[in-house]
Length: 275
Image (cartoon, rainbow, N blue to C red; front, top):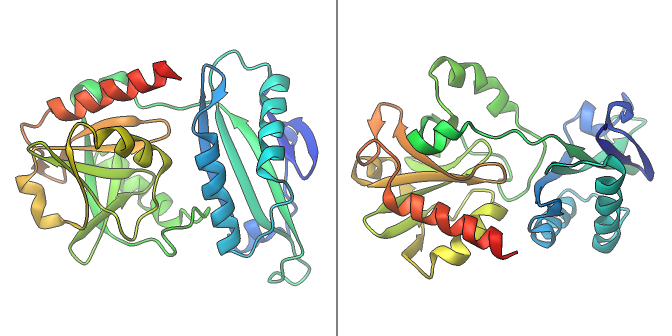
């Protein structure tokens, strides 16, 4: 069965959902989005994603044409109409809409799409992954915009170096990867950057139960600290908790997924089972 999309009030197969050539999302990259997934065909942490999406829209002066309750209903209809038998991704998108002069917002374009989920291979969780660092800080890091220009530009280099992700750093401080949040362990202390990053929904979920198990610090993490960390991992909608065993040429800890990271992943799965 095809995946379906909701576009400006209409429900249609995803392959037939298009925006106009004059849309500010296309012309100027003026758009925000959010992305979540289902577990057992139910949207996961939907209210948190909606709150962040609404915040992003406000920051770009984009007016959402639907309330949060209406969006919930649309998502439910999309899942039902798509007749998806497995879990899927859900993308919320709001652009500046069609613009006669290429700069003025008139009526925003609003879309919700259902998409096939793409996961890291299972071996990534057993062996861990490699990151490479690059100097960069996203413009307006607290807003989830569609501007992934730097991530796409660096993707060929990431593939050449057989890295899983690019880890952004700025002024000697570690920030986030192109699509995920970054955590390290120093012994039994869990540390994650708290400023100049997008506060991921999965990041917040992990922190919510990690604080009952480990000492947690949200603070600047320096690049110079990496040789002294015992474990590292990234968090994200499709990655959950993915161990990091190498950053550039620096092995993290013993160069394999650490026990604390794996314990958090186990707790993550248990929390999912409770829902």
